[in-house]
Length: 627
Image 1 (spheres, rainbow, N blue to C red):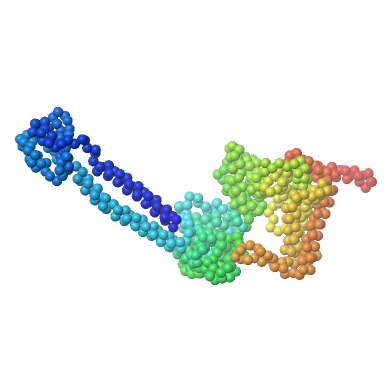
Image 2 (tube, helix red, strand yellow; image 1 turned 135 degrees about the vertical axis):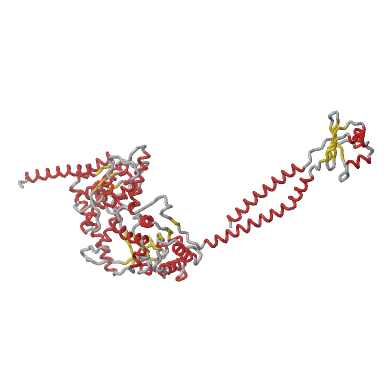
């Protein structure tokens, strides 16, 4: 309505201004010029009889006489009476009048007629225009009301899309691409399958963490098959008005069938595909009606219909079972986070059009980025390019990639934060404690870098990364990880006989890990291989609210005791290492205070030299004792 009145006011103002301009122009045209001073008419009669007049110009109500001497005079005339009749009545000599050239002009008559006609029809024209604008706006409003129930899907065609993405642009995910190649083959050659009585999956559900390439794969399928690709988000179906979502679903499927073979891609399916009956509003809930319509449309496909629905979600656990049954989303494809080879391939794809320096080692970057998704790696490469451009470099070097990795993982450097000498010392020993404990334990992850430069929320950090991707972790690895997490806390306690708030995040992570070992992983020697607790989730809110206790109060006390025991055991182990290798701890902290950052090579040299010296001293002591 606001837009409606806004458009009317703009159009009305424009027409009124044009109307005023026309009035001013016509007023100027029809307004007679200011006449010269008129003379008595008898002077004209005398001048004609005395043969002083050369020419007379007659208009409607006035005469303009041009004297032979060059004078011009104006005389009034009775309107509607012939000038010759007037001259005859006033006694003008006919012979002398014949010598005068007389011009008769109907000045202003035509203009007056035009103006009078225009002035009479202009208000009518204005009213006609005004009501035409009103009717046009009303039709637009009605059209918008009907379009309200139309699907807001965006149509992409392979031959019209500027950025063409094929399977060659998707690194890794080999098994996933093989699954989707069947879909592409069906869209290209549907008769080959129909002749054999085979049915291609009507719905393909892509499941995986955010950023793993679900949308990218759907676009690749559309490009490879060369068919129209209708893309829409699950949230775009649902509106505040009941029935709109279902109407949009009907419109979307109807449009896709007109363009078949085609692909419908629904992103974030969990926005409308959650389990029915758990929300507010029961069966009349708008979201549930939309889901019901999707179920009907997917199950209502004819056998020959070449329309495939591809959907993406990272929450398959909350989807309605009816969606996952055969005949609807009967093929589920899981996209995992990329392994080291896939990460290297993804990095190569994102670096294709970027000038790389000779020192760039994408394999090393891939080793440093376990747990990164494809989107994270794309962001990392982009941040590296931004850093190189900011430094006015012609190439992106390894240094930019490493800095970009730390920026993406931990946040930008806080150069404006100024720490006191005491805070720096605490931070140095804290990070040195993490590094030393981790390097002293056989099952802990290797330390890549130690720094006391503030990044993000951390005053310093110890970067521990596995040598290779791990899909299974053992109990010993978890226990060593617990000890490494408590290394900073124990270092503060050993050196300063005090503790600080810097270890709060470490303690939180360690406590959660110890609780998972007992309750989730069944790795408690005392309680055995039993899983305790069951998570409860309210579907309509989409987040975990509570945990159902399926164990007694006595068992709860035992769980707490086991968690505390694991934490205490890890603390004792870390303290023992730090006390035994106190000189190495001091040396690492000292170098950190000087350089602020230590890479794994420098750190390894410090630890190795200290270990060799300690070994020599221990050997000398054994010799003195005669051992």
